[in-house]
Length: 83
Image (cartoon, rainbow, N blue to C red; front, side, top):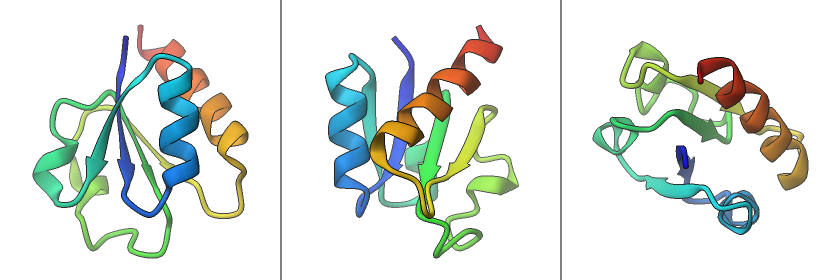
């Protein structure tokens, strides 16, 4: 199953992804994003972590204004394109 990096403050998103069987990695620093297929960020610190600067090869999803379920759907769309 895919590894999904999720910012610490997105607890509901972490729980939703875990319930669907994804391996969830908390993003505390840029190195945490390495090895993740996709990362979910709050959008508040968009470039502080440098995730968009190729810390990962996968997609970065901005969860701002989205429900946990909507984020999971977006993750599934992005992961589906990569496989």
